[in-house]
Length: 340
Image 1 (cartoon, one colour):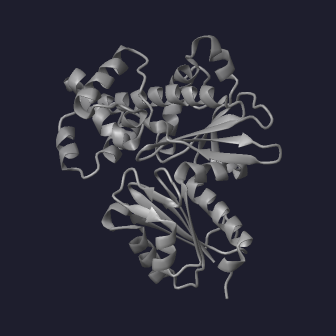
Image 2 (spheres, rainbow, N blue to C red):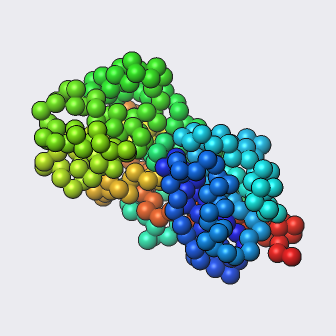
Image 3 (cartoon, rainbow, N blue to C red):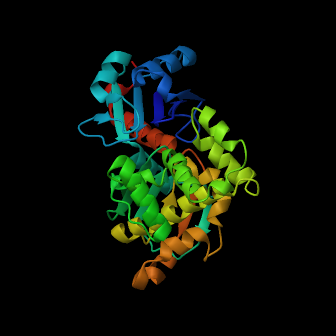
């Protein structure tokens, strides 16, 4: 029996799996607010109290670099350690992997219903695949073909320097640099970036904010959902929110194109994370000259190459799926983790 978990800065998803159910069919799935717990072990204990099933192993994906089975989470004050979790939870086996690496494990197994296409492109057989995932933060990963299978590779590309593409983005970068110093892509291309970008745009066009919206934002514990909802559901009444999301989409398109060039992602680019499914219509799926694809292909002489790369949005819980694939495979390979 396996617990798989997707540990994010905002929420933690935990699910219970058996060999019979397989990685696509968890028997129980629960969501917990990450910030209300002191650490991952506390979340798992709460889950186990509800599940009341024998568990021998676990696999958790986390937002942050994993070195030697340990990770200091990027957007949570948690230290996640495989050995400590196994000891504290009484499990025979615990695996901790990077969240984007988990998505990468899932990508080769995704089905049509798990995806929405932005650009059909012409994929190269066994070509490298890139993944970019704006959620609370910004994750990036890729998969390379080894002659018989795809090998997932994690990265921390979301913390690379933001490169503005036009005067508005230059002004945004300068605004954020005054506040934070270093401006990485995560500062402008993640859920946590949305309020900062909204505030910046409000300084340029304060008249575009509808009456009363500032008060709603000031009272909100998390401003991102309010801004996203206003942009997607009330865009005519709140052009400032819509401009924020459209700026986000343009920056995401540019960075997705950067990643595609760096790993030569002729097998495709996949957009994961919590943000893309929530703003799907702003990607203008199926429109080659839409906002996202214009930014994606604006790479000078290599624009035509990028135009041939498939781009898809993942609309399923891919990190949890990948953690389940990894965890069940590890369970089969380790007799010590089998039930006694």
